[in-house]
Image 1 (cartoon, rainbow, N blue to C red):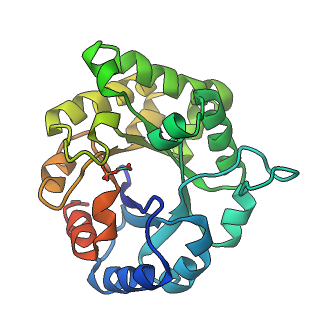
Image 2: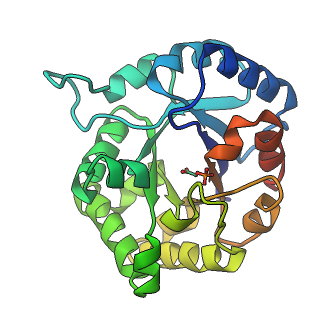
Length: 252
Ligand code: PGA
């Protein structure tokens, strides 16, 4: 059976006080995580220590939103995989569209970050997705293929056994325009079939999350789709009540 995961992506939001209140509300409100259900929050680097202190011994895991592709060295401003392990991270988001588009991360760099995460036994949450222009030009599948191929070429298809994929159409992120459950399912199925053509077993156990304007009122219908194994949640993960409701919409 595939693992289900709902992960919050706090992006560059929050402060010590707000995070403390949010985490406290999450700890008390979160549904019990079943055998194959996981919850996580991905916080900005400076808050990882306090997130670790708050969430240790709870059913909520945590992670970061970015990572260096290098293991150590003269890379001013970068944060390595081992540093994230030091703060108890389980997950790290790699290749979020905001990193690709605003910070110029190519699919090759994203693949190197994914590999760096796995070297340290962090679970990468690999984001893929098309822009509106690409969807309108009917090249969604090519775009996603290219993004996945960079990773598979570098680390092999078997590496996906220890990773999570998040399909996040760029046009749905932070816009309030969610993909319909069927639109999302179509791409999730496309991704799973593509992986299955290389390795059936990997495809069957791969968790593929949907991200892009997932809210408390649309999570359940998305999570019901057969190839959607949870969500990567931006805006709604900052509101405890909403994030708890989204986590509760997952059926294990
Ligand atoms: P959103 O962000 O839920 O605010 O659309 C999702 C994401 O960027 O991961």
